[in-house]
Image 1 (cartoon, rainbow, N blue to C red):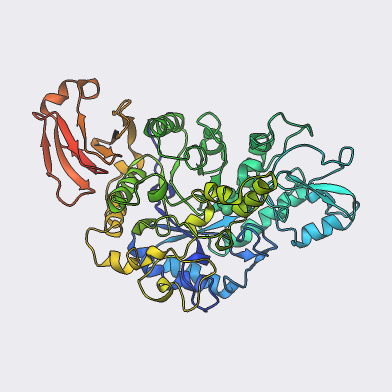
Image 2: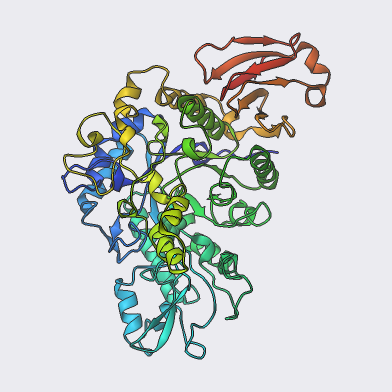
Length: 555
Ligand code: GLC
């Protein structure tokens, strides 16, 4: 089906978790100046857009996702001048800047909330969600992401306020029009400063359940999301803000499915450009090839001709992809390249999370005291409160802790891995002596060099952006083989997600009679030596452990 070209569809996004990227002022926390300092490096990756995590004023209970002033830059991050310079310097290098905005909730220290909680008759009371309790208990049995209840009693007025995340992150009441328009004004403020893209946090939660009733299984928090009214809010936001700018929007849409996802990005509906769904990152704890293929196929079918998707396997909330979905031991480099090749050749916009391009791995700190992630720390307290054995709870929480991907960027093997002059806010992964940018720069076969090839390829091959997608690997549990096709150019991507070699046999089912004279030319391989041509007599192709190859069909 025909896809309309647009610059944002051709994006390769690099996500910068600035507090763990580069610290220039020696406070142990990364900063905007650090991002500016590394813009040449970011540009050298061949990416087109830089997404920076929230840097607005915040008490930092949830690393900036608890905003107390939407119009100010957090001291730790720097100043408004730094931000303006970041925009200018990013643009000067031909890249765009994407900001992360949190509009589902604020910090409990935001003046709006302080006013709202000050009395039941305050004009801002209705900007948040207040409810009476039920017989001395919270209004409903709903959970929050980070706590056993999504309600917190506020003694001053005797009512409960709702929070989908931490207690310090009260949810805004999107049913209040005045509040919504205040947020739109804020978005325009940043877009007028030259921001080119918005990553919109926790969007699925904006509209709240209409009925205040208990749910059967509070742990399955889907009831908090995708409630009636959500799409009207997004259409209004688009109408009031997005359509007035040449920009890109990506929504964080938890629990989006191939049925509901297209509603957010269908070009006719004028809501968002693209979305993150979490059927892999949240819902598939370990690599499961058949499940992954199914997810990709269903989404590709659902979005075809309607809207544009996004591809990622890790971010600041999800463990490093090479550790979670690859093999970070004997095949670290190979599997990091394989996963990269997959993300950059599947349909949708590819995102690179800082450090992924050098194959950074997850971390296992020794004690709970080394961890900073509020989601993990709250869960730890909750499980122990229920009688869990501390050591067992700790071990169980480690693999998926959000801190796995929040360790400082590994620039070199020197002091603090080149992150800064002082000890960082969170411990460095001890493997920085081997895994770091400096080492990767000096190795033509590094993950880094490979990522540069991937991004360069996209620039000159629209088939990677706009090509149709057909999975031709069936139910093979290790091999993922698919075809991308666009305006006469046809690519075949073969990926062997396995510690063993695997053989793929080309069949007539897809190629029909063309199989007899099918000729392939290698475009890119993850291994150093790859036979550079293939001819139809062989019919099959052997791939080594974690090997990936892209071929062009030449006849
Ligand atoms: C999003 C963010 C996450 C944050 C949460 C609450 O999921 O990515 O880091 O904790 O929203 O704002």
